[in-house]
Length: 187
Ligand code: 5GP
Image (cartoon, rainbow, N blue to C red; front, side):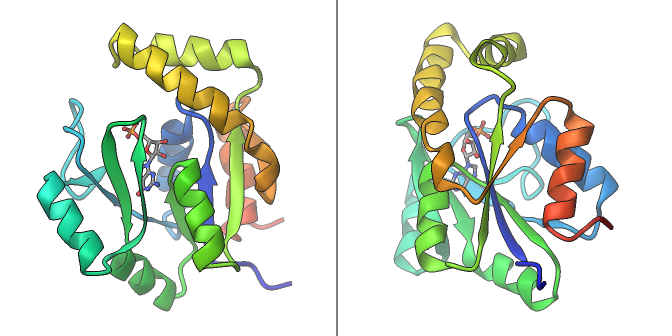
């Protein structure tokens, strides 16, 4: 069986995608993670070119016009986020397993443009656990939390569109399952 090299990892906001991906980065250096462009401001500790490429709305729009975006979306009704086509292509050409950590709208676009991609849905163990994780993170205002929970409800309903569901019960277990799926870990 040949392993698809492009994997989309999506799931509701605050499900713990960032933590799972951090674990994967530390333990499976052969996996290449796409660094997206975004118009949102950096959070404390976030670095240019590591977590995101932070760009202005004008810069983002000109990247779209030039065909530099493999997919892009307006997330939480506010900022634009997109995958930079040339960088993904370079990693694929180098034969590395590639993970795109993107939202549902982006996952749907990739399904259309790259039908061989595998879509992985990272799910919370329960709705209550998802709420607890979002509130516990403490990085968003109450208004922003409410907005993100609305988005999360819609995102959870899309699970059936994905090829595989991985439950994020513990970070290590979920990460190992994803590593196996992308072919970065022995069966
Ligand atoms: P955050 O602001 O918390 O870093 O990310 C918010 C959401 O944007 C997450 O659900 C994340 O998966 C999504 N996202 C990050 N980069 C991209 C991207 O390049 N494209 C799309 N469609 N969504 C993205």
